[in-house]
Amino acid sequence: QDEMTGAISLHLSKRTFCKEQNLVRWRVMSGEEEKCQCRTWILISNAHLCPPNEPVQGGKRQLSNNIDPNVYLAAVTIRINYYINREGRWAQVLNMSTGSLYERQGYGTILMAGVEDLLRQECIDLVVLYPAQNNRAPQFWTSLGYGEPGHGSWLPEEERVSHQQGGPLLPEMDPYLNATLPRWEKKIGPSQGEHGWEEPKKIFGNSSRRHGGKLRFKPSKLRQLEPKDSRLKGDLLYEAWRRAMRERSEFAITISPTKP
Image (cartoon, rainbow, N blue to C red; front, top):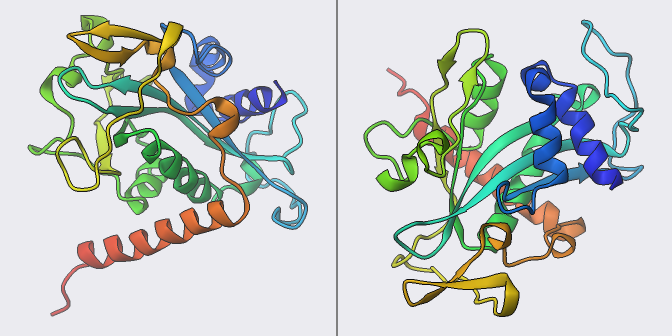
């Protein structure tokens, strides 16, 4: 419960999410419900990991609800979807926040590195998101390898149907421009039929249902790991971060301009 409250406080400390407070709370607190199918991860520090407190400058918004910023550094809320026409899952980032005292210190990168590693463990091969057009968000997601798909989207056409039209995708709007934000994507693992792909584990009993002769998961059970098992810490989190940093370096090389 404390971690959920901490995640909500981190999200609501950002202007981007101020107009969707009830939605943020519902996604975090009721993520396992059938109509929600979300999960939230939070980066928790210990005393030697967290940098010393510094005065807040530039009028940045403070964490709400008296949550200790030395404990909760960053949070991300993600919706999980099962592919309609193939085995496996894809995910959509709905909310991503870093504590005001710890922005631009690499904690968001650490969090996403760990989360991507955990998503791969649950046969999730693709992550999509709609970054806010505030310069900072696109820069952050670009550094992690996300980008606009152009004409070569990894997301199948049937998955690109919006939730308002009965599909799984949740397009995001710019509340100030009243326009749909561009969708960005990142392929994080092998898809069905590709080298290294593993079929999602079967879950029997009340947590599953039959569909098309194959075992499928209920929307509220689109998971292979219980919340208590979907965690990384210590050396495992450090190694996930190291892999992300190597990937970032390789990505930076591929997009660097050619010198004359």
